[in-house]
Image (cartoon, rainbow, N blue to C red):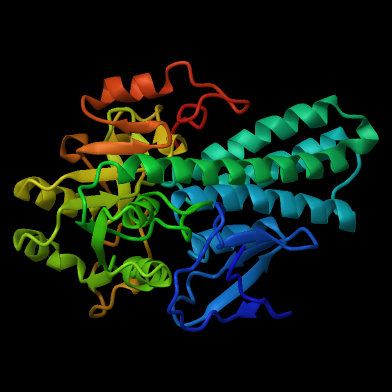
Length: 391
């Protein structure tokens, strides 16, 4: 991989300023394995001021990283969770904290997966990925010799985590290529939050589309919403676009209507943390606002997400749990109540098309989504349905 920084013993690195296009391989640079088998992650809370990597060894470390947004983005959270399970299992086997025998290995697996799956309730990829590796590991442990159960657990989790990462990277590439074809030549694109390699296991969903479309001459400029309250757009999306020399203008979220009304936007594309069976989309707070505004000005509004972001167990957006962020993230007077949801739900009626790794689907979404998953199976079961609904 080109342009990966040299990571110091303390886990820190600095890319410095760039004037040339950065070359990526298919996988995200935001996560990797260390030689010792831990998970090395780019700490996104430090960007753009500092490029700092942290090493994850335990379940608690990964849960903290997910909840603190050191790692974020629905697809990347799923990948990170499986890698975190693998790293923790390997350490438990090495240091002897995992007792011998099948029953101990199965109990460790159950407890670890339950803890990891509950780290963030809205991002459906997290539970989907955890349940996927749980099933495979459970089967292999049950079929192993009793004295090999711990080693089987660690080996299986590592293999399945890598497979999950590889598949997500391929899905991102497929999404990017399918979505780029929907853009007119020289399009001015508006996007929200962050959906690139910092949010996925590959080049990204919505931002992956933008990158490929830019390479094809289909994108001339990107407007990135600041994305309150944690500014994923101004901190992360702008950072990614700058590294690939794609022209970018950051704007405050409340300027979207002005920019679209002035005729400066040709298409809107966003990501998704969960998509219900009827096509309702849960995404970063402010997404619904953009969809309403785009509809009023006749601007196409696309959602980009892998099939693992669909939850067929949620009939509509009302069934999707919405996380509430901490009140202290919003600066206000003492004693004033704060409403700080992390996500909102965009009704399917406002969505022009959903770009998936299997192509672009359009309304009527219940029928399109049913066809999307009809006959689709993999070794982990049916995407979008196995994980069910979060409690």
